[in-house]
Image (cartoon, rainbow, N blue to C red; front, side, top):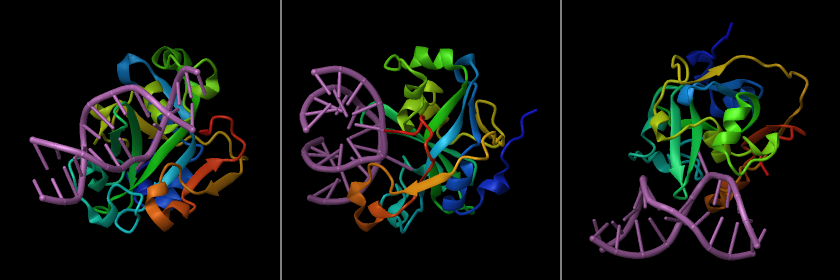
Length: 198
DNA sequence: AGAGTGATCATG
DNA sequence: ATGATCACTCTC
């Protein structure tokens, strides 16, 4: 029996959510196939004060619309003309903060993941990056604004199979443009896990 | 280390 | 309208 992550659990500050999301499972039933993976790497985006966030300065645009929705909403965006990245909206209602899911350890549906990701030849290449995992789980802009708490296509479950792994913390990836915010240790990962990006 | 790729956003 | 940018990935 699957136990969903509740909305209240996600309605906390994004740093706490980013850290505690590690070890939980993201499930996709997109394309009629069940694929899932344990979250092994995340990044927190802190909203208006955070120069690296899409909602820096309180910006409200068409792209970041769902980042302003209530916690538990999926925020999916498209970058570099070819990649999708997926976030879990966190925080109090109306607070534009989110957690980027950066890497998963594949759990179910590896076969479908290999089909969707032609570049991958080993399990560690399936979901070891924010755009890789979206490709592996078939997440696209269609999922932007989806309900990760009550939805059926894409959702989070509570399982934490590996309680022993240590949590590491460091600066976020690819946010060099963000000045002093680039150095903030807002990236979290399970130390030593081979499915972490890079 | 460099290219690919096109939506998005701020300027005007 | 236009141009620079980009919370990345792959291949060299």
